[in-house]
Image (cartoon, rainbow, N blue to C red; front, top):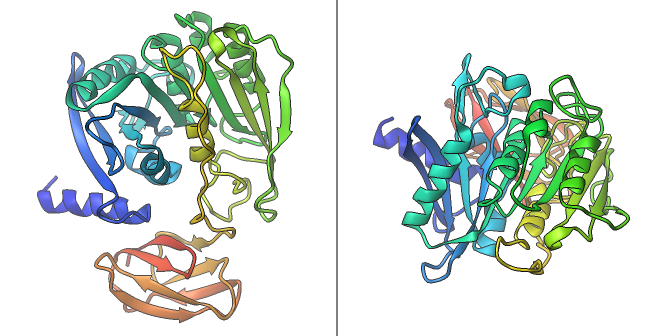
Length: 385
């Protein structure tokens, strides 16, 4: 990749997450493992101080996805800035052209040594940054959620806590899973997930069994506490229920958030697609859960609830995206103005919103990456002629 293309790619990533150029540094890096070179994205927020050991969250992408997409989708950047947390987005290797993590089940036959990759990656990061080695965490979406849970099985001496979104555990991985200690775990899953079925598949345990596995591993004895989470977006047609299992060995816990009516999505994506939960941002809830745990602290450390005043209460969807000659904007408010802005920040098109669902002509605009900007919201748009 040329220097120019590399810069443009990183700039698009920063722009897509609503970041300013001064809110942190994002790098595409390579680490050498015994099995060969592996790549990852590294985001170091400006709030990280070299004199203070920083926690690290590893965020694994889904099957046939990418570190770039996970960076955009999971939305950890505001959390990382707020809490001084280094974010790492590892890249999976390809099998039959699809990036993946070797987690058994549907990836059976993969030869990728992803646990080795993470082990070497952590050594590399700790040699280069002032990292709190007792506060390293793993999370991920779908196949990435499977990977986070595999690390809980095989690297529990390095990973303090894990969270899986729309992921699970393959039966053969569960059969061999032997963590060296109790480990805190959060599972977020849609009841109507059409990819990783809540009821299980031949290559993935039922989600209730996944949760119970960690309840048993951690010897949690208290009755589970159930709470309906606030229904912040009544238009998303889903409801999140949180179940907490406490009184576990080593003061860890297990948390399970069931998104009733939810599909195979990362909660908080702010899209108007059926099955997406916009009632909470998974990144916020995950960070609050993970960061309270440490490999060395005898009890969890309280984390202040994360608030995001910048998260809108409405959802906007652009279809199709990428678009050619027109795009339909769903979620506009009649009477407001939306602006189409190019990568240089130049306003190339101003549109008055006349209805909640409105077609916008893109004729005459060059192919490229843009943002459609409202007074309280912005969304990326790719034009391909």
